[in-house]
Amino acid sequence: MASIFGFRSRDPVRDGQTDVARLDRLAKLFEQIAAEIDAEKTGLESRYREEATNAAFLVEAMENGSASDRRSSEVSALTQSILNSERRIAALSRQSGMMRELRHSLDVVFGENAATDLAATVESARQAGVGRG
Image (tube, rainbow, N blue to C red; front, side, top):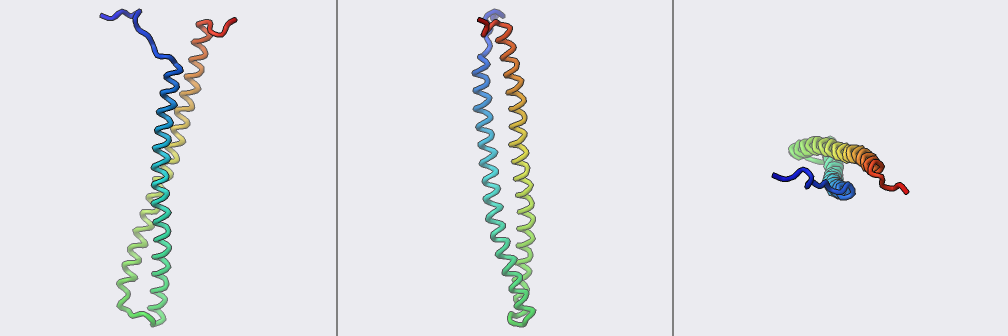
């Protein structure tokens, strides 16, 4: 059986360094995912504008008689694509917002823990007489 007096706790500085490294990895992951979401959304918005423009010109051409009514299936396909793009852009916007919230929550949680841990470390050092001269 191990003696209770043989137990040693880790250095609070080391714990703090571990926490900071963990926070940094998590923050970088959230930022990477947010960048992926933004890149997808930017590309999709560009294609969305192009499809909307093409659909508008095609409908106008059909109304003016310069395009055959047979192209109405093209209008339907463009309309469906536009609707799908709108749904995906909305989903990406929600995901982007969630990433911002998670990143903020990370700052809040680690900020509170860092302040609490610092206060506990200072109190422990004070009680042990560290820094008295």
